[in-house]
Length: 407
Image (cartoon, rainbow, N blue to C red; front, side):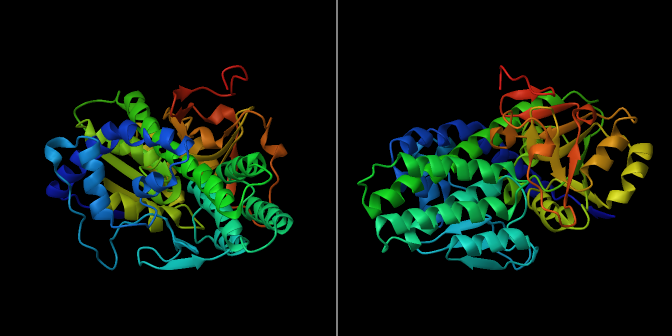
């Protein structure tokens, strides 16, 4: 087990940062309307997709959205082992993804085609969470950019081939398949006589919108999830057990479950996170703990095999899991080990929450048996509704199974 001490000065900085992020997310996502009107340039600047100077962009956004005192927080100095960055950057001719297998060291993989992006997903370089939807969306944009010199029918064939390749890269990631479905619909809705530039711009707008919506949904999940969990005793830190990475590297900007933690901190609550190591991927140690340390959240990394000891000997107020696909029945696909964690928590009286934004909730799929799953050694669990207390979503907590009317 690895304990990470706290630094009060950094805690104060990230507490202020968390307040600004959660309070300002609604303003930032006002850009979604611009995206719907086709303002790709605005989206590029807003979402920080590798274009322009980030510091200058931050200053313009702070001025536009009325940041307190007009102040712009300077970025922390970069180091070899602790820098934070987006899990991907969009270049003119390629998508550059952070190789999450190499963390905490910084290494990137340059993907100039949909097949290269799919290979990075299969190899685990891109992680396994909802951020794969954003990466797949921009991968389809890249496929059309790469085929822009071809005649119309050949471009269409290239797009459809790329869509199928990306969809199969991780069949258990609902955010990925959902993004492919949305980009395919956007592609098919383009005018038959659209030129190459309009096709790229139309797909880029659709991909930008997916990213903007995910930021908004993560922020809302964090705010509403924190309100639901801020019910424990006030004389000690809130103790939370997290399984799988739920920070920005896996869930997109702001993060999923980590947004809940940061919202609690922003509200003035002390929080201690018990982060599972998530074997065999070591996702907890390599990715989640890396981001918890950067946000100065007090945490302890434990192996999955120590969860029983933890629940028997320490106060734990809630378990948070990352949902990668939620079916109408309540069957929930989550990182391998999640089922064991949930089954240990249930008899201990500890509520189990699965963090799930709209991109992974799929009321059209009845049960997990309907999801095409690879025959290789599994890297996921299927959790029945009975072991999950509720979903934490951007619309607030939701019980399982899903209500087909409200969904």
